[in-house]
Length: 352
Ligand code: TTP
Ligand code: MG
Image (cartoon, rainbow, N blue to C red):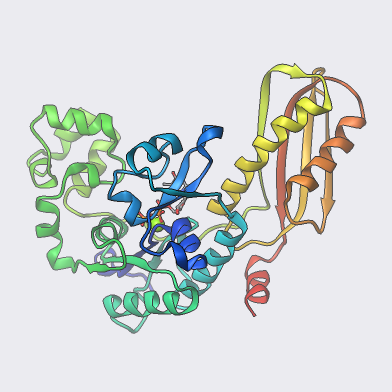
């Protein structure tokens, strides 16, 4: 059966201050206090996120920790625990899959669901999903419900934290009218500034331009803008295609000569990999870890070990092994994981 694009029911679900909410849940004494999660000030760290109490002071994601502490001196800064976040995200993901096979994760705490085929009305359905998530995890989430991804995503942000907003197809024109153009997916600072120069701040104002006008101004994206500013978005909800591995690597400006130098860089790459893993591959079980080295003469070697969860100690052992194979100067280090073959089955097992 093909579904008319205008009659879809899409939910955008986003956990509230996800990492911070988990830390506060696990440390009840922190309830009501401003909490950030990320790197320590003295190590030039950056916050991954913070709770809503901290946001009142102007603290936000990606802010250097020292700056966050200037704005909010009582901020409690906790280190990240990616393994815990991944586990919670997997529980959430499993709940979402009970309601539709069409779940498209945007990050570990955010996803679109196409619930068009579900017999329930989408608004109450979103409430049921959020209640279930809370029941299982004691974490709150917010949802937007609309006829497409654009509307659903914008709507969920409007009722944060712990709320939801449904925009019916008939309400879309009114919803878009006063909406700032920057809310549209694809409009960055540059486009926003150009539009402002044209006297355009809201989607309603943008609607005065014809499609050819917008193409003249913005090229191919202009044509998309013509639809988006009217709340029209035909992008389908696309479930994840499982990848086989995830890795991160760095080529160094000058070759590394000693194992100690390599170990220092390995620790940084490990942090990056873990953050990436938490964001992109929430529910997958890792069944192999590996370290890849490329040497000054461009030859390469990979050391890997099966049956290990990723840990710094595990990667260090592999680095030592790979380094000892040649003793040549190191031009690039890569660290990565390979996933178990059948993600869905693995996940079911993990949750039993
Ligand atoms: P978001 O959903 O963007 O933020 P959030 O859940 O913390 O807060 P909100 O209530 O506004 O949704 O990101 C989800 C998690 O991803 C967040 O808890 C921490 C992590 N993250 C980073 O590591 N770096 C970042 O720059 C951002 C934005 C998020
Ligand atoms: Mg979130």
